Amino acid sequence: MSPTQIVVTVLVILVVAAIAAAVVVAGRRRALRQRFGPEYDHVVAEQDSRSAAERELRDRERRHAELELVPLTPESRARYTEAWEELQVRFVDSPAETVGQADELVSRLIAERGYPTGEFDDQIAHLSVEHARTLGHYRDAHEIHLRNSRGEASTEDLRQAVVHYRALFSALLGEQPPVAAGTPEQRQPDAAHDATNR
Image (cartoon, rainbow, N blue to C red):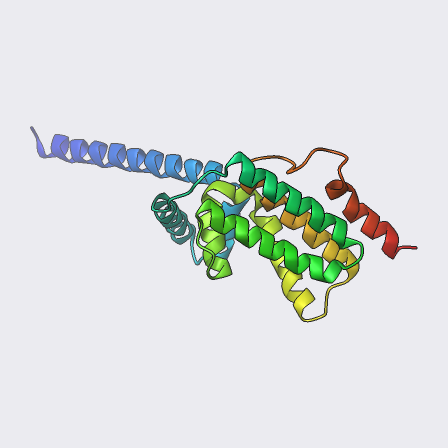
């Protein structure tokens, strides 16, 4: 083989390797986007680079695989659904307390499913692998809960927090919505909204 042929062969091999690497990276990126949905964009916005964000998401997948998640028994699911219905009924009379109770109920459910319940950011990271599409709701609810603890949340904010908590609650129960349509659980936030506008 002449030196020119060797150079051309090496260049072809390098081009093919670069194309193969790009295809692999694009495939991994597509898989992460599909799995994490809006959480993918959220993590990319938080990190210094897309590759750092993707490393973080792969690390979340690895840590999630180490968890021993357990499905809820039908009895446990019924107990949580009933607790949520009772919580919604109490909202009209005590919205501020109800938001705190919603946070506690969601935290208990997270723990019973086998997720860690330490720092909020750790909860988000572990939940993001299977529940990425509801994390925006959970973040919003948690933020309102914190404002509520400082006395800075309006009744409408509190109503929104309960609606946001319900999104993750439903996903963790494995149902959408957690209770049948038309129950007090679904009517109470609107009733609370109406009561504050009288």
